[in-house]
Image (cartoon, rainbow, N blue to C red; front, side, top):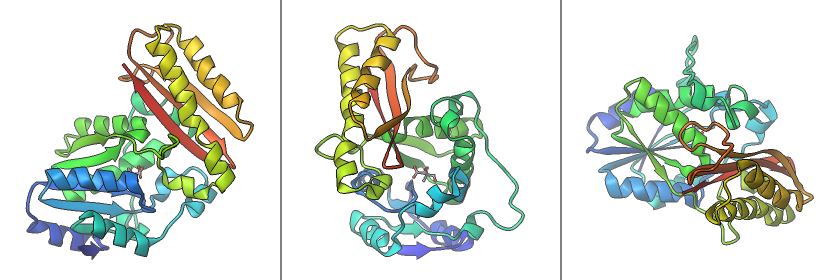
Length: 277
Ligand code: PAF
């Protein structure tokens, strides 16, 4: 496995790479969810590239960026064991060189949910992913479905900017109690970690209501919120039942819905979703 830190070295290494190339963009602190992305990329690509870059432009609060867990040595060992060929682990200046002054800003799909809760977040994501897509020129890039809206934003961006990389969403990997794997889980205490299972429990209750024939989106949102309300440690940011294509909130559910939520536990902001129908 080669580790490169500059745009120039990445381009040089990839110039002779066997194709197709699969890209797994990450912010490090790798877990089994990232490994599942690498496995999928490995199965479909001759060369697997992983980027490890904690992107300051997608964090609203400086504290959130500073507290984001980091351990490069551990990440590199995991990446190598998972079958990555090339790791791109640049410094901030290499991704955003002096004078950098461009923002990729996606429209309507980036506005609700995470976009409303975290102003500027998706501009930061779209900008860094556009740079990564341009640098790597991969045939495919792999993203976790836990960040459903992120996948939708990146898809829109790649389509609109005619970037040739296909965006491949991969299933959320969960702990046995249903908690979606996330690098942020590492910031929870053992008690908070156990309480965080309420996110998936609440989504399952909402999904079950829809599967049982409930058509009122309000009733579903209320059912999800009620479960979250039973967990005193959970402070709810939003509960949503939205159209899976537009992410607009639904009034009536006609089979398909994206249930999603954002909740803080011990100050750690966790998100999850379930696509129903
Ligand atoms: O999902 C993430 O880890 C990040 O948002 C991404 C896609 C690597 C961009 O920084």
